[in-house]
Image (cartoon, rainbow, N blue to C red; front, side):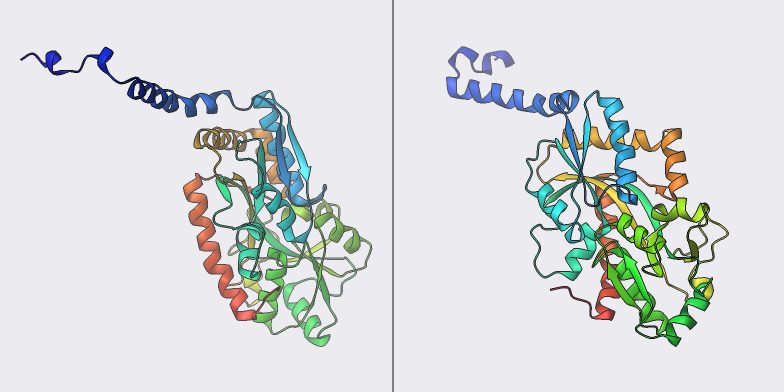
Length: 335
């Protein structure tokens, strides 16, 4: 018997089976086509802090490059408040069609999950990870009038004035807040945390002399440091930062192991098709290699750092372990 004689006659196949086969074939082609045609209308990029801060600067840089590459406007939508929870919930509830992106932070994906018993989103399940974008070290910035110019002098001042010296951060449960908790734990000091709804608001009060300290990303304060409107007492990196080699680390002041950074990354609502995720990921990586983006991030003090979605997930899990130990040691809970 010839092989072709053993094959069923296509004409004899049930109509249902034929239609199913066509549907499967079309489905196999649908995702690549969707990724190639995306986007066909404006895309919204939600940023969880007000305009003017570090997160906003990073987000707008990438949004501009996406707009140029895609020929579709990427509209920045600032949704500050509740330590990124407002923006995160809005993203999680949006349609998973690629037209809502979110510049997420360590606070959204890690800190909130460790600090709150109930959240209107699931840090591990509500988002489709796309790529990290930047890593940002934290630093201790102060008003020029503060009678301390180093971490050692800050510790001495804080111990002489327990419960009086205050520091501002971009919110309760933010990485800046946890940096302060860890600092108090390791140095035996007791400073007062003053939370704000974003970096721009903290900066305004620091420059005005309303608060003496700001636990900030270098991205937030770079311009003010260069203009001598703020001074930096120390940076929370394991080694001196290549962009700011003149700034000593907190570890150098006698507190080895003190390290705190944050990061920004791009995510979409869970269920966003992989073809669209891959398209946004590819554009993120491309943008991060552009000379003007590199210079822009360098000027802000941010380190460009892109990843695959899988590498992004692994980094977040490591953060859960590292930050979780600090939260547990301090017995910190926000609800």
